[in-house]
Amino acid sequence: MYITSENGFFGDYGGSYVPEILRTAVDELAVAFEKYMKDPEFLAELKELQRDYIGRETPLMFARKATELLGGGQIYIKLEGLANTGAHKINNAIGQVLLAKKMGKTRIIAETGAGQHGVATAAACAKLGMECVVYQGEVDVRRQQPNVASMELYGAKVVAVKNGSRTLKDAVNEAMRDWATNFETTHYCLGSALGPAPFPDIVRTFQSIIGQEVKQQAAERGIKIDSLVACVGGGSNASGFFAPFFDDTEIKLYGAEAGGTGPELGNNASRMVGNAAKDGILQGYKSRFLVDDDGQAQETSSISAGLDYLGISPQLAMLGKTGRITFDAIRDDEALNAVSFFAKNEGVLMALESAHAAAYAMKLAPKVPKDKAIIINMSGRGDKDVFITSPVFRPESWKDFLRLELERLESNKNVHEKY
Ligand SMILES: *Cc1c(COP(=O)(O)O)cnc(C)c1O
Image 1: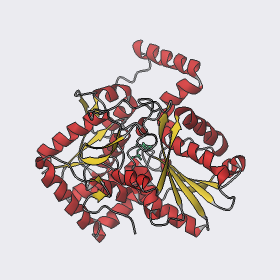
Image 2 (image 1 turned 135 degrees about the horizontal axis):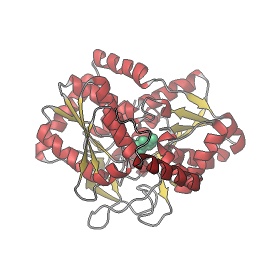
Image 3 (image 1 turned 30 degrees about the horizontal axis):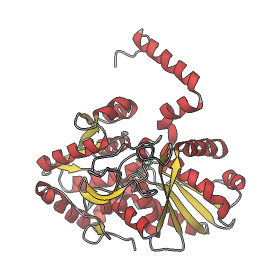
Image 4 (image 1 turned 120 degrees about the horizontal axis):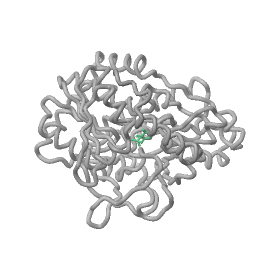
């Protein structure tokens, strides 16, 4: 059995700290979720979308050369990056948008930081015929144009949030505000395994397809699992990958956080490693947060945009505290090294987020016996990171390329005006 919350709490963490005006919305959602997760018709539709639209199941690949080179446990990679839209986020988005449709909602809102959850939600809404509005901080809208362009292609409206630091946490606040006003017609599709209850349970449940498939794939092929490794931003891919194994304490669970450029406060996004994060209540739930003594958000830093949120899934925080999950912080340079290593040796281009898990597995492998397996969840593929990896791996030719692009645009040549 999966470990779910008790009345929305995971030990001391979790809960549903929302203003009175949102109480009806979260209560209605909790009831509907419980109802539809037992509804055969809903489950059949979800399964069909997972198979034909997302492209499930995703492969569990033996990384033969990586295993030889690292000289220890067998390395396997769960290729979630092959899911439609390029990452695991679609598992949650499709689940929630279908649930909202069953609830009679016609409009979906979402928050997004780097834009990955916005893209997944916009795609799911296009597929299921729902209106979609994505809140994104103005700073993020400007620096994440490729994802903004994709969201708009999928027909979503992207609203640039101009409050506060104009980044992810401000987008969450704005989405909450919209939901409070419009919940009769609108569902808030939250993007990670956090926020007020019942979201952590909902998101983990829709992502658990990852761990369920791994369990079955490993059993069919006689793979003896020693450990599972996932990166942890908000905690959705890790939750879904780990959940079917929570009770199987023979199997070790490792979470890789963003170690950024080093352990000093502000240079990373480590909520579980080090002692910079504090217990607190923010954005509707109790967990560990990177805040100062006045509860104000601390700066975070990571080369991977998906791992730099200041909070973490309350369930993962609890499981870290009890020792069920071991956390480590992986630095930017270690993640970049893992991107190169798995690209060259396995032909797999990992997202920078996923590369944090891969980098941890590289350190772990020599300590694991050769007849046992380490499974890495490749939460996403790395095509989206070309604007970050290219300036690092080949800065001069990338600058030249950008200059050329700008010249081309300014001279208006080759621009397909008729579209
Ligand atoms: C968003 C994202 C993450 C981090 O989010 P979680 O909720 O921690 O899974 C990790 N990998 C990829 C590819 C992402 O897009």
